[in-house]
Structure formats: C-alpha cells, structure tokens
Image 1 (tube, rainbow, N blue to C red):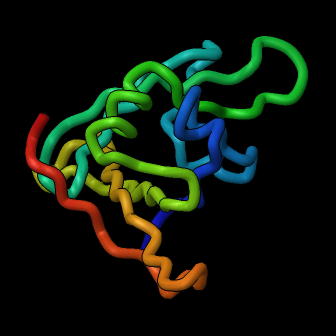
Image 2 (cartoon, helix red, strand yellow):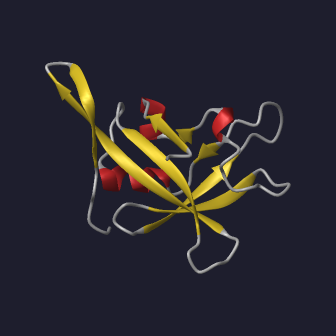
Length: 124
C-alpha cells in the first residue's frame, strides 16, 4: 500500500512537488534541518535523489525540489498524472528504510478518466 499518492498539478510539473502536510510523516526525518536528500527507486530500479524541504518559518509544508523536475521530464508526466511513494524496509536487515516511487499516466477517453496506467521508462 502506498504511503502517499498525489494527482499532479501544473505547479508539480513545472516547479516542485508540493505535498500536503499530512504526507509529511512518512518522509525521512529532517533531523532539525529544513532540507534533506530523499532517495527513491522507481519501478525500473533506477535511483533518484530528490531534495525534501520545508519552510524555515511558519507552516512546515514539505516539497520535493532538486531532482524532481528531472524525474518529471524522464517519465513525461503531465498535470492529472499520479505519483505514489512507498516506504520499504531494506531486505539486508539494516534499520534504514528506503522509498519507492511509481508514476502513473492518466487514461482519458472522450474527456472521461478511466483510470491510471503505470509508466515504466528505460533508465535515463
């Protein structure tokens, strides 16, 4: 089951992936900082490193920035597509979790959304 998923908006596609605060808990701990690298592996087995950050003051809304737009371009994502993040336990027995990311294309026929199809793109 996905830790969180999001339908992408124009801002998510052109600037950064903005996440609702309720999705903050499954993200890696920032350990007193407002920025942290967030590694994830896609459905092809390729590793991506995103930068997860929050505002320094006020409401701590998390966003993924650095590395995110490269992922969007590689998967050819558009507004309305969906991404899912999964928190996994390392099979080698270490306590460090890792994250999987999956991208899904919106399937639309005559303007009606029928569902989503996984995107499996070759390595960049």
